[in-house]
Image (tube, rainbow, N blue to C red; front, side):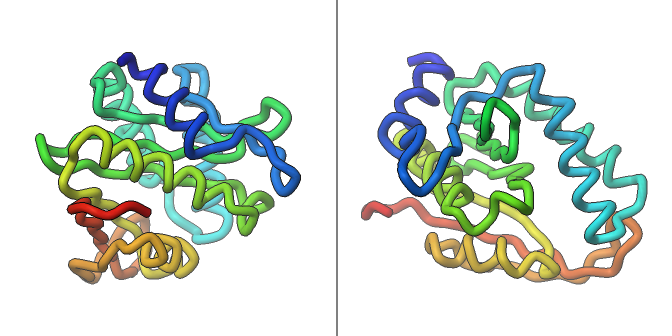
Length: 185
């Protein structure tokens, strides 16, 4: 099945396009979305967390890596949109033959708390399971307690926490893992 076929299947099964609680559609990432992904991430983290200019370089490098892996059958890159305007994104790619990684999971602040983050996360975890990954990894910082709670609600466990000097800030990086052995979400 092609990348777009997988995304359509996941969205049909795990991401209803619209319901009475949400007008958020989930679709496959397209190359034209890159500008929005970069701008939205940089804008948010510079405005709300005062990250320095090195963050923009890190986001651009992450996008270069992800776009280089885009054709891999085990990848899933999704965009959440409202009225055809992107409002969120999540990227799942292979880190090894058995380990997948979530990168650049972002949702505009005005769209948080509506279940969209759960839909995006559920879609990539479902795909990771279907693609027979054994583990899903994601890293965040302790200054994102909402993200930490979301990962933990899905069964992710913090496997390491380390002090980090990144993007001009002293923080703690939290690395999470979800073991995909049996069971369903």
